[in-house]
Length: 459
Image (cartoon, rainbow, N blue to C red; front, side):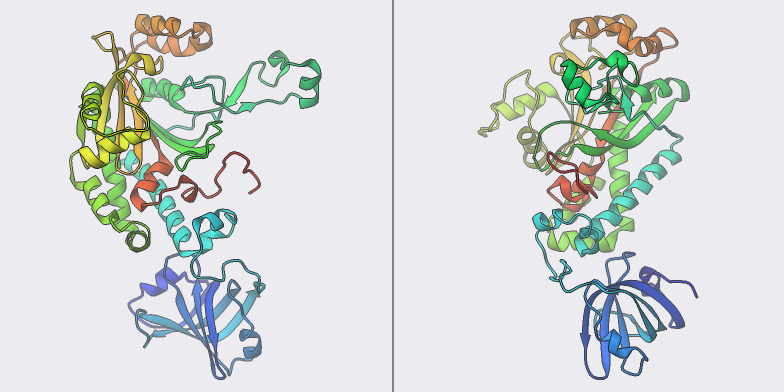
């Protein structure tokens, strides 16, 4: 007889004479005649109660079962007289798959997030982290569904790259050179390295995705990206996932339309398919979450130019940690003020000064700004960052020269503007930031299975 998962049993409309359940014991209490065990198998938030009677052949062993132990139960699914549960299992046999020792670290019902980060390999067994990682899985499914329904093609862009898309320079280097030999020579000879040139872990798949958008029309890439920032904020990790669509024959307005459609569709999917897990976050993490989700789905997003946004910030009377000055890149406090306090909903901020943006963004006719756009959302700040790409070869070459970029290193990128160039746009959405938005979780480390941060790589 095959195992049946608990989420299916709890949704059953009828009793069953014989089922097999396998999972981990959350709580147990025993008496002379019965043992009551709450078992969870990770398929849903709720536990399933197991009743083991003293007549079982191994009842003495059952009485020794501890929190965290893994068991396999065969029995009947029967109506439960207890409050808050429809079904329970009356066991005919209980097999102990493995005992958890008394020092199992998840004995208490509640633990701090800080403590659970020290045992990231065990924290998925808690209610909160089981819920977030089920939601994470569901959103991944929703992303692929969203793009498949719209005729996009999924593209796997290189993780190892010689290009620095963002121009930040804070990248992880990839090398096969012997560190001892590098130290002896006092330099890295990239001619002797594996690729014969400097290589890094990617910060974005955008430049590669552009090449395929100019062939297949609409594509998206979804995978890990890396930043070597020595940052310990609640919004940054060294390894994170990025969703990046690229669309041919699409201008900046179309880019914003697509971003709004995406966020609304993914949020709606979570609300419809993860209701039980979301309820946990509404109850224990952010009591305003239901209102936040309703706003994300049902309100139209504001669209404001950078200049208009700066004027709002300057006239706000608010004393910011980073003073507001024209031409500056916005800080998180500025983004959140606009989204949370002024507009009280998501907003697209577009047409940024060209001096603070990368070379590939389309230059506007005013000669001062580029067709860049960020989607700012409450509690998070920037969720999406993108632009209409510069499709005009002469403008792109001029911009690269201004920024000191060697055109020969981007020959393939420039070729795409020589041969059949078209207007096109795209953006990157931080996947973990979206998860923070729809769950109310405030630290990005808590939506990443194994967060990679400065000084943390062991598990």
